[in-house]
Image 1 (cartoon, helix red, strand yellow):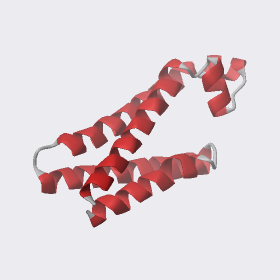
Image 2: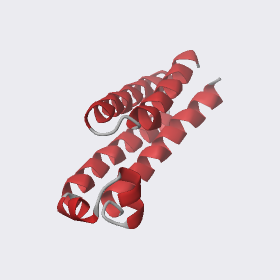
Image 3: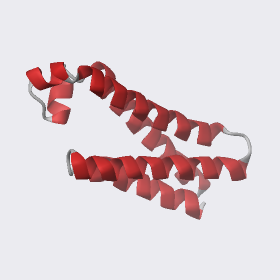
Image 4: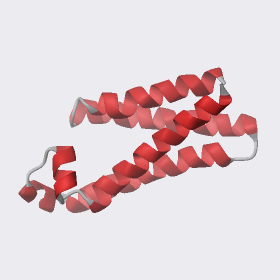
Length: 120
């Protein structure tokens, strides 16, 4: 079960690295416009805000990776739980304020990973 939990946590970290890339580097490019349903004008006007959002997603990914590689097993589970809950809170807020799909893209996978970590 521990291996499955680690894989799920790693996948959530990879997802947040991808979100970082989309928000920091592709926000006003075709891929970012499509992913976030933006028009070019709005994307160009909000590119620095999106980069800031991307940076925070990078911190979430870094925290999850830190939880995976931390050498003390009881503590690494607590680190993973903390950052998974942070991902879930961010996903709930994003779903409430931006796009409902965020709930299924971010929150549900983090909840599944959290359950796996708690059961491991």
